[in-house]
Amino acid sequence: GPKVLQIPSHQIIDMGQMVTLNCDPVSNHLYFYWYKQILGQQMEFLVNFYNGKVMEKSKLFKDQFSVERPDGSYFTLKIQPTALEDSAVYFCASSSTGGAGEQYFGPGTRLTVL
Amino acid sequence: QQQVRQSSQSLTVWEGETAILNCSYENSAFDYFPWYQQFPGEGPALLIAIRSVSDKKEDGRFTIFFNKREKNLSLHIKDSQPGDSATYFCAASQGGRALIFGTGTTVSVSP
Image 1 (cartoon, rainbow over the protein chains, first blue to last red):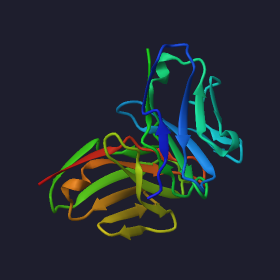
Image 2 (tube, chains in turn yellow, green):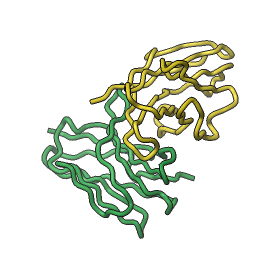
Image 3 (tube, rainbow over the protein chains, first blue to last red):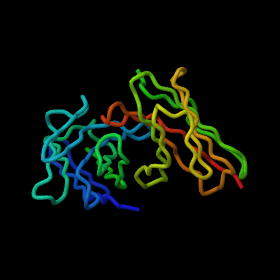
């Protein structure tokens, strides 16, 4: 089926540094999402993005977070500065039809903040 | 407060049995309920989904039973196979908004 790629698969950084997580969504998809999953807990919605704009975000999407998809390339999640509680697996998803449509997930990026 | 709850954290069944995974939700405005299957080290993959206007959705060995009045649903995996061993997430959304996930049920199918 359609594939969403995420780069890198693992990232270890020191607290306070900036990190950018990259997502290569399904090629004809227009809606993009980030989710956060702390080990042993459920996946939690962070943000969705369409037509160059944030459409909806949750309380977990702190001011230190930002998303963009410059010129149709990677869909990115940037955290600046990082905090210890940002350690989690971050999943990117994309969809052709928006919220209620099928969301295709990437394999996740495991972020460890030391 | 959990908006989407999965009653079992784990479930073990024998090969050939039917695995039943339960899910309940708080928000009566939720209208779309997908189930996702996740293997270790991978992202979740959509398995089957139902909309609140239906009470049953079947796809091969997988069936969702939905009870709008009771605000619960269940996923039945018929003739369970060892390859079905995975974590299953119930999710819900309202009017096309973000998916709210349950905490997942890890299913182990013993041969």
